[in-house]
Amino acid sequence: MKNEIKIFSPATVANVACGFDVLGFCLDSQGDEMVIRKTTKKGIEITHIEGYDLPYETEANVAGVSALAMYNHIKPKCGFEIEIYKKIKPGSGIGSSAASAVGSVFGMNELLGQPFTKQQLTYFAMKGEALASKSEHADNLAPAIYGGFTLVKSTAPLDILQLPTPQHLYATIIHPQIEIKTAAARAVLPNEVSLKDAITQWANLGSLVHALHCNDYKLLHRALQDNIVEPYRKNLIPYFDNVKYAAMCAGALGCAISGSGPSIFTLSKGLDAAKAIEQAMIKSYKPTQIKFETHVSKINTKGIKILS
Ligand code: HSE
Image (tube, rainbow, N blue to C red; front, side, top):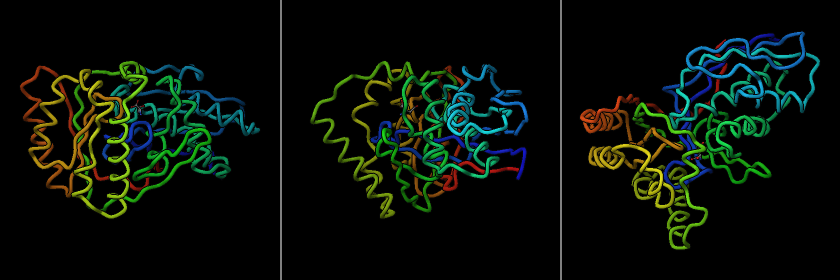
């Protein structure tokens, strides 16, 4: 059995417009790299971090907390070292904390001979995600682990459904270079929603799931709407309406906040459409004084993977 493993832990888009806290999909354009190493010294130690300034203290690091959740559950005879090569900017809205939380437990599970299922890995990773967002949700974690689209049917008990991915579906992401902490983006949301809004939202969510099963791009277009969360959160993202308008005019099937933002995602049919939408988003954001990045990604149907 291996003593060391290098993994790619992908970025993800959570919520996917109408699926707040339950729906997500996996990207392949961005992700963190992590090295997990078995040691004779017991415990979990974070030995190297590159890319962003994150805590080395195990209990204060998302990857460390999820690793500890698994470690304390299985109580192995060995310990683990974790190296994090962080490529996904924290607070970007494309599952930065989820990638860290998932990477450590996935790597440890491989080195231990895969004693845990994907669902159990998601459970441990949820403990790490909770450190970052002050809430146990799995809509970034599940797609990072399973790949493709996932629906978190419930978190207690954890119940995850894998949904199909239409073959020609692409995502385009614009990431304004401001940081929005998930906890702050959750704090602006109301505690209650009206029955009318809830009906619209669950009709859209059901339609979106149906569209994924039927490869129905026209229905995807009609379903990709968020009338509950977006009205509150869009105020945290400068020029959100402008960039959404530009993306929709350029042919996006839908455009919404990625996770808790500030990234904004679109879905489209085919690579050419995704690139045209990227250009439209660039054109709309350039006149602002805010720096931004864009990328186009095929939906990653495999999820987290071993590099070596
Ligand atoms: N569903 C979560 C949210 C994703 O939107 O707050 C970010 O962790």
